[in-house]
Amino acid sequence: MKKKAFIEKTANIILLICAVVAIFAVCAITLYMFIKGTPALKEVGVSDLLFGTIWKPTASNPSFGIGYIILTSIVGTGAAILIGVPIGLLTAVFLSEMAGKRLGTVVGSAVELLAAIPSVIYGLIGMMVLNPIMFKIEKMLFAGDATHKYTGGANMLSAIIVLAIMILPTVISVSTSSLKAVPDNLRAASLALGATKEQTIFKTIIPAAKSGILTGVVLGIGRALGEAMAINMVAGGAVNIPLPFNSVRTLTTQIVSEMGYASGTHRQVLFTVGLVLYVFIMIVNFALLKARKRGREHDN
Image (tube, rainbow, N blue to C red; front, side, top):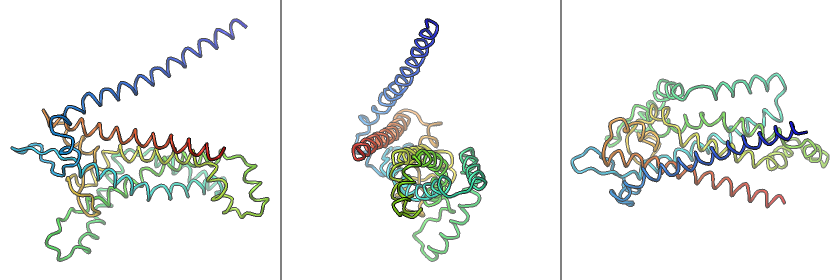
């Protein structure tokens, strides 16, 4: 008994230490980002920095407006979620409810391989395959338009498609696990009441697994917001209003593109860009917690 009590006490201490380390890491990162990111807000001005649209950090009269960059990240992530989540959820439904064992194994393995592909490979394929296709579409749509600036296919639409593909593994794997965790008695009860299999899936199983599905969506949003390398390769890298055929730049690609040579106020502003990105991710996670809490209250 003494040995068992000692083992349990030791395990509790180890788990407590791990929890404290995790909390400390989050607090330390948050504090560091605010310390490094807020000076530029005071020096440049909150409105000029966050809502300005002109980015010329190396000009004789520098301008540090990141309004278009923030808007691009929001629009790009939102569009990728609108495309990727329905595809991912339907794939998860297929894997958990409809696919046979052999086919499910093949599709599941393909999803796992999709998750294992490095970001730079997505960017390379997008640059070599997707961008030329987009350039052909661009030439067809804007033929004879002297005001249009051709991007060679490196544009907002290419970035959205790449992001939508990249979030699929996360959404599929988390949603599949959540759907499989739904008790079989719910399925049996729905079918016993005369519901078809499709009605059972969409009116019983998916609502029962909505908490886990929301988690997958939020993780997908985090992946889309935080992606840099692939988007840097396919989006063109110019600070523009986020229209489909404009070359654009996101918060992450802004940091990646310029941190290597930035100095002074320019470097401080890039830390502010990182702070904005961090705040966005915190807001998304907070929204998830609220949605899950409301879901539990509604179920009860």
